Image 1: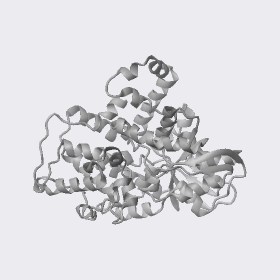
Image 2 (image 1 turned 135 degrees about the vertical axis):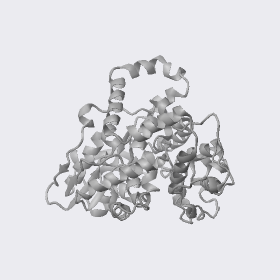
Image 3 (image 1 turned 60 degrees about the horizontal axis):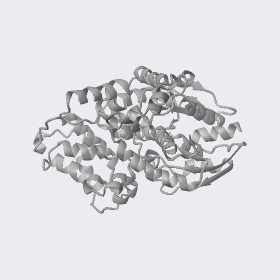
Image 4 (image 1 turned 30 degrees about the horizontal axis):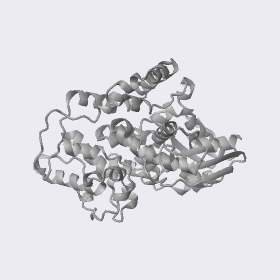
Length: 447
């Protein structure tokens, strides 16, 4: 599986440069948005790949310059350009640092869409991409089958045997490093869909829609159930529309924008029928994508206005609870806790204080700061599989700061970060739990 995903960003044997702007269909690239960058360089220190490599072409300023040069026909859309674009984690830390308000994430995703429209990948690479992004990720049935296979691999003892034998490390392509990132797949009951309607406990205060997500529902079903319980305890009737699908984040991040638009339309229709006043997500990456449906469908006459109205209702679950007023848990969790910002929650959705307020409301908990909590952990969707070496270098930097906190529990708000940080804890030999904000909050309610 890891080998297949790593091959998604594939290079062809021969490249046919697109020499002029007139030959290149820019698709939905927002060219004027490239002009917002004033090349001041304040983003450089925030960029993970620039901190590691120190290469101008691998920082936001350099990447924007390359995108504009390709659009203008001054640079060919070739292997070098593709490499620099896909080495970006799309963490958006540069957006927080930028004084000019450059929407770098949107420009990067549009540039990758331009790549996938024009770059002549090998036949194998194209087949693998189509299978993953156009068939597996949009289909709960296929994704469930894949996850069930992962569960069998783990529960049968085959994973233990292969790891103990050292065979994985001997295989090419860094397969051992990739396999070490594999999360523990929960048993079947925790992979089943949550109820479509969960009533509020006590007096109903809000009717909210809940995006269950594809990765969240299949790999983190317990967190979804904890999220619904926390919302219910706080007077929310929770609606999880049966017609909802993948948010499209992984497709958007990897240039597959046609599929993303179809998924967005289906989600808009499903949640419109729910009558929810807010649409909540417990996944930072999913929430950031939902909030940008208005931009994704801006040129769709039938959905543009509906998409803007949909996005205006989207909130991260921690943001919603903290801002709407929540009932602090009566139970205690006596532990030293530290919080790591998920990039698409902090930089994509501008949510930082609210999760910390929830954690600080837990009795018995000592919340300690994490140095550079605003820096990426290296997960970035499937980046840790397609760019494993760079991902692990970024992760190792993160874990040095995590170790220094002396925390018992590390908390974050995104499934990719949970997978990456749990692998980092194992890799660093730390005795530490890695939990989602809602998971810890529900533990306190139950205490």
